[in-house]
Length: 224
Image 1 (cartoon, one colour):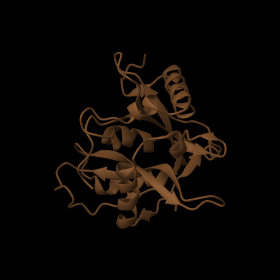
Image 2: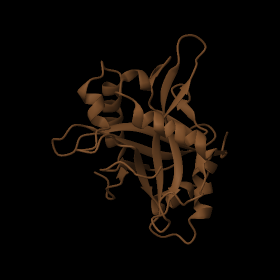
Image 3: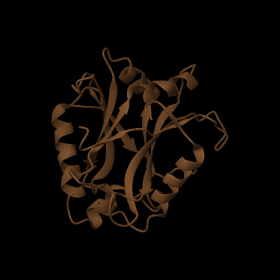
């Protein structure tokens, strides 16, 4: 067990990521739906990383990219819940940091290119697709290479929010869940699960923030 609860040991990471693959690669049903179920309040919509963990992450010597990996973690006999592990990687893709844990919030939020800001209306569409999806199915996490395991971001996508966070306080990096809706090479309209990064500052009024969104990431697989 890690000394810091929000930092995973390699053994925990392997266990939780394997559980995610088992659930996402299965037939769907309750196990996958329960990963994102918010008790009595519909669907979980984001995970959070504290400002201190974000500072540690981007301070990693040699960092070029931040990799996020999907996890499924059971809590005291309750069904497995979706979470994220984040870690720094170098240009060769080698892990340079600890595994930082970003867990989903108990209740859904009421707020509505590398290191490139995404237009707000586009993000709103992605977030809406997630909350409006009639069901959480394996198809939302499917790739030609197998179940979606995470995303790789340019390190700048995690560094940029820190400019708006000064002075550092009780802010968090909010990693929201969305669905990208698009037409693939062949077949009907598709939806694929994605992540959207944005600094969350509780001192700012809800909906009043003009902080940028970031989501110019590469999926794993194949970019693992």
